[in-house]
Length: 314
Image 1 (tube, one colour):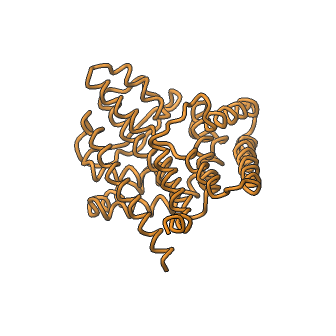
Image 2: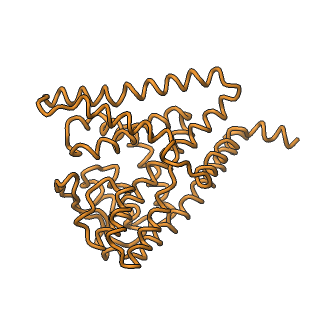
Image 3: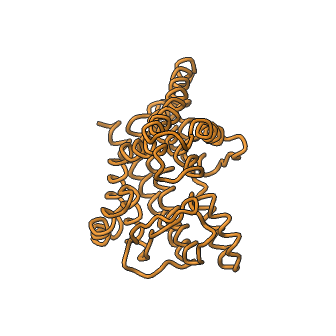
């Protein structure tokens, strides 16, 4: 009977094991497939981007450099799943490789370094989770950048990956993950407003528009709904990237601190609104953020399991 139950709920078992392994098994970046893909996209950009090219040529090059490798990888893996003995478990392996859960650990180390007065080391570590210039940041700036990056990276590299996997299977989750890796790789080389970046930025924005807003609204129901709704109306809609604005509005309202603001990319200043009218964040707020993320994770995973059982019982 137990074996029959496990077979009936094999999909849920694979999902839970993939999530559990994402937190307990941290693969080294030296041999992680994500690192290889990032190197591939980085080298592609160096080869095709020339300053003399027109904006239209840059946009076309960006689209080809982004979508051709992704399509090739997805088609090869999809074909490989047909000859595998356990295609569902193969999809679970893809989910495990797409999930990224190292951001909380890095944020804890940043908070510890700041509490010890090692701001320089904290800035250096911050570059591993925040794809922006950190040299000129004050202590408050380091804390705020840590909170911003922790919120955005956790939502995109964990929750949205899970949503895409549940709704459409591992290959849509993989496409979204590879788009994020391409964007991250190219941000280290080009301005965020470079025309080469437009195709991947548009693809990410369109793909995550609905699930990100759905996630934010569901989480707001379990937290400070009225304040979150206020921040969504008055701040998120005026943020440069409205998708990111929704995420930061959610966490700003529930941490009761101010997030976002102007920042530097490749020594170029980009002005953006500050989200929230509360106090500036402090070192202890990083720990509060981690606690908030833990409670959200328990709620979201519990809700996912209940919905899964409900669908299979109908």
